[in-house]
Length: 210
Image (cartoon, rainbow, N blue to C red; front, side):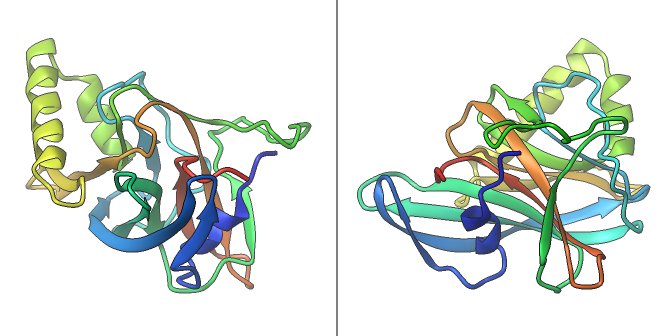
């Protein structure tokens, strides 16, 4: 199974500079928004490229959770989103597992194999399963308006991230952010603390190679 601990460990707050193929990269943590989860069932996806995406098999307690992005800057290169996380608690993960959908398994994966979500629009996001259900029912016109809303919100942000309200009454939203190299397939991991409690969910945008 592919896993880049250098990237995942950045989220523990112990790394501010990391060596990459582009030189030394400074890392900045940015709060991208507060994610409202009314079911605790999490979907990570390209917010525009929607294929009836499913939630991960790991569920969490409904509530509001901080979403952070970790932005890297190496020499004269532009800033890139290295990773994005949902912070469930402040405990440091001691074990990482690939985030998988119901029925999926990472057993038998080679060291360079992983499951992830496809990005074609330079954006990733986290959302509650209920938001995906809303999107599945939208007309083409409504989806076009939604796409413009998401892209405009992220483009107008200094940190290329945004919190987009989807249903004010229910408090449903998505938190979207730029996705590293813009296009590709990117893995997400679950981090468990010493008590085997899920403490983080992190997407690696594979800016930093192992």
